[in-house]
Picture 1 (cartoon, one colour):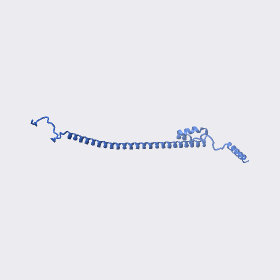
Picture 2 (cartoon, one colour):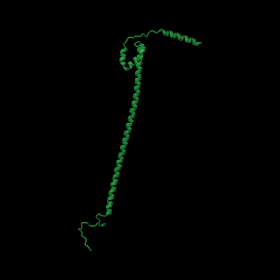
Picture 3 (cartoon, rainbow, N blue to C red):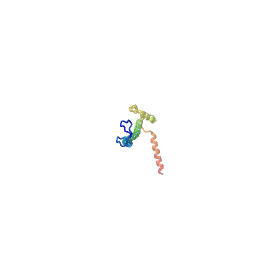
Picture 4 (cartoon, rainbow, N blue to C red):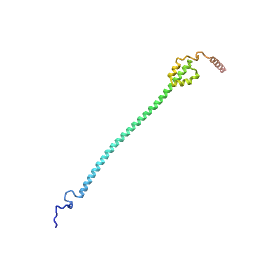
Length: 163
């Protein structure tokens, strides 16, 4: 029998020599490390999913808040438009009242009403300064005779209606 040389640079692995060179032990060691790595990576993925889910909720909440803000601004803009329309109507009514006042005072003639109204709407302060101290150009105190005639006509119509 040949003697075994302990100085052999390439000894044959002995499955029973206990130095961990058994292929099955090596496989099990690699398998365990692989499973541990996969398990750790799965945990990392789950943590990332949780973080992503939290970020998604945060983004959804932010979008909802922005939508609510936009809707509020739109409602405010509509209210401003309604209020502006009311203000414009009041300004128009005030201008009409001023023009009619100056017509009643004889400072304007009725034929000037539209132009005077446009002037008053354009620059009310200037309009008032022009006509506030202006003299009357039409006598509005005397009643025209035609009113008396119209009154008599009304009486005649009423008289004939009775029969």
